[in-house]
Image 1 (cartoon, helix red, strand yellow):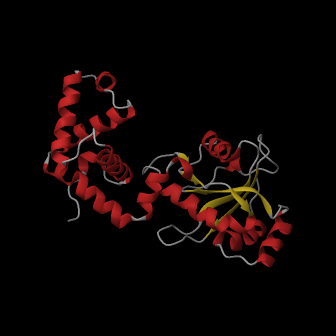
Image 2: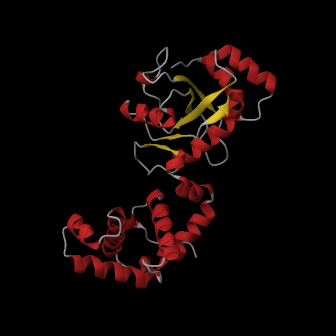
Length: 254
């Protein structure tokens, strides 16, 4: 894994996107990378750990080049960015490597087939980063977070979705609101099992059932109707990505 002014100067045009074939060829020569290969891009929300920046390939054979790129609209400039020539284990191993090193939050792009595509991959990695919960240290792959990525890509629609689906919850006191949201999240994590959700929450299964029924009445959506369940799940994702925890959410846009 490498970094430095020289590498950054060569990576910059690639990460910005739209590099000419001549620039791609020059960067490939300077970095010692093939123009075509299995590449991914990593974008970190915090400084890269020193342990991540070492010479030579990692245990999987992946080769890393660290630099920085100007942010796209909605991104912060100067984020830590890596172009990764992937080993056999692919982007999943790259994400695991960063978690092991204590990096994060971070986003990892899907695989692209050439250096000319790393600009597009950098934008996708930045979108993946936006799906990390505020204050978390998670490193996620875009392919694991596609629904949430759609939401963060259109914040005005996400805000509207949250208001439309969970707006009625704002009439409740924070403790009640948090209880209903926690119950729904737990029920979903338990695969829709009321019994398992009750065991995890430490209450009677009838209590879970009653909370879910109340949430259905407040949101005018049924957990047994797939399309309406999708609304609730997506609204939960918006709430998860909000800087305000469920119990502190006090208003929503009209």
